[in-house]
Length: 274
Image (cartoon, rainbow, N blue to C red):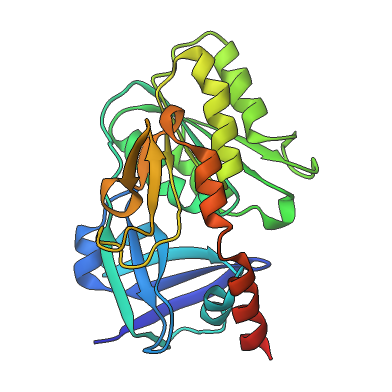
């Protein structure tokens, strides 16, 4: 069985959106979950967090950035092309209920998976304060969708071309220092960003959740490749997560493991391009 790409377009340079026809997945998908796809029978399996889902249309929306060989290859596909394997929804869904006031933080491509969480939180009756950021306005996307899903929306760019000139953590710090009650913070983005958000929220004793993206192979807890250290206990991101308590995650170990195969990933991309 193969899965058809119904829509495909570039949101901003190197960041793409694809909608994949997968009725059974779309009917079961929930915010915070992910899929593992394989483009063809010779391809590698890669995990991508679900950015949106439409049960009536039977589609799953994914957003990805061209980084390695497989994402470069995926970016070359068009509407009508097919993907050999498309497995999911995997992982534990986000805990969505009436917390009160929730801050949703999305950095870079992390804006995509934070969107369904923010929308779900607001639908559950929460006041949702969203903070999104990117290096520059030129690679910022879905500002309009995040605005619709939020009670308040703040934007930060590293170079100051849009919104606050600085980092999302600056805005999170300001929100916490306003003195109002914040019941939960959810952050998704590069590990260094999520670690920084955890560092900001910890002194305020605000429950903070992050979605981890370690190296992953089977997505069912069998291979152990996605193991992370949380509260001095080994967890598997695919079945125990991908969301964990940010204040208990060993981010140094996570980032070290993410860098383990960078030479091989670089070589694979170079071979593909040549």
